[in-house]
Length: 220
Image (tube, rainbow, N blue to C red):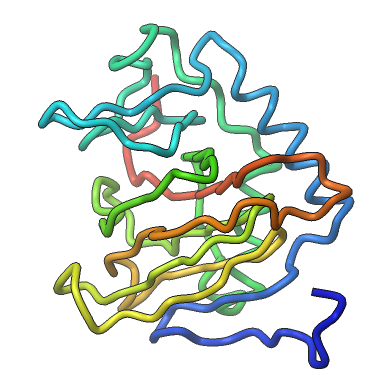
């Protein structure tokens, strides 16, 4: 915040997991928000995700490139309107590689063919339980970019949903990248802080853009 005495510093939260505050400037955040609003429109738009046990996720989601549903990927919104998943734009893959290079170094970004985006929308009451991003066949780093309201992001370990974990405050424009020994770490969002989005952004709630490399064969 502007009132803070010292700027927030980048931090390694765990081996291979790095938090970069204020990575996206206000203009870039507005561009990303405009793109997210277009992606959220039907068909294959923002949906409520239902789990195999009959529950629902409180964060709503739209996918690009490959459609994720618990716990697999498809080329159509098989648990929604059945429409083909929206395409993954090349510029978003470039954004992912630049994010990894900035957080972990250029060698970690080389050859990373990002082809999946999961965009989650959180209102003030939404949460995300501890989980692993384990449905891909690639071990390339996961890229997470936050827009809007601040959240508490809980980053754990690859073995258990419980401690040890670290709670990180993610604000609008913050980047979080995790790969290497932390690629399969459990993580979640126990709390969103309503009303904390930048006034000039024009967003009520929180958007999280998560980029992944599928490792799946290219469509023919």
